[in-house]
Amino acid sequence: MSESEEHINGEKEMNFGGHLTELRNRLIVTAIVFVLFFIVGFLNVKSIYTFFVNDIDMQLTVISPAEIVWIYFSMAGLIALAATIPIIAYQLWAFVSPALTPKEKRVSLAYIPGSLILFVLGLVFGYIVFIKLIFPFLLSLNDGMFNVMFTVERYFGFLLKITTPFAFLFELPILTMFLTSLGILTPAFMVKNRKYAYFVLIVIGVLITPPDFVLQIVVAIPLIIIYEISIQLCKVVYKKKQAQHEAFMNE
Image 1 (cartoon, rainbow, N blue to C red):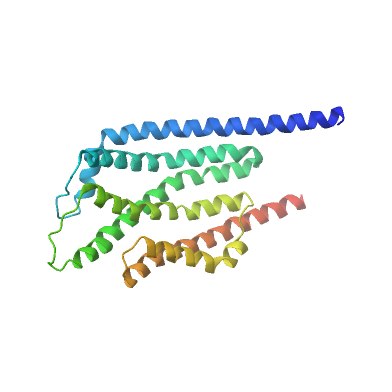
Image 2 (image 1 turned 120 degrees about the horizontal axis):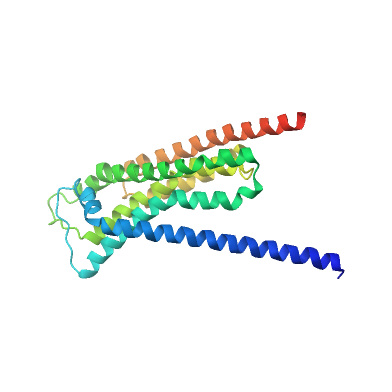
């Protein structure tokens, strides 16, 4: 191997090592922020818990000390996750930003606040679906046959199972716009794979709802609408990107 080839390989190894170091540092920063917000959530669990149980007409039960610990960690973890979403988005943006043009940096940076807003909207939507549709439906199946009693762990475990997927799925429009602005995603790809996306979204709707066809349709339709909105946003970003490219080529 010649000296020039050794030099090039050495630079590649240094660049790869530098990227790994940068990625590690960004993951550490994200983890630290998550822990800080986790502590904030942990110290305010009582207020968070009160907010969630205000909409149900029953007293939840604790049958073991571990459940008390579980609810503290679950509530604090949910708050930390929601608050860390924009930090994760920023760290991702900062990691890929050296490969972007100045305009792409400005445009993609604007997506970060939207990531938090959509995550919270997803949680709210999931919570409304649970409180207004799913929970009443499940209680209606009782029809006076049983003495209804829910433990804290079982109730909130089921609640989080319903709401969390909505929170992440509501991130789809922002993720779509970001990937399109990077040239990774195109409207044609999303349209071509629409039927597969619909199938996945319907499966998700089935998994997070009780075995009732109407409820599953009610949940699946908003998810499909989100995908269609994502396609339209992808088209808008893609057209702007194409127009910018053509303007640059004509200069």
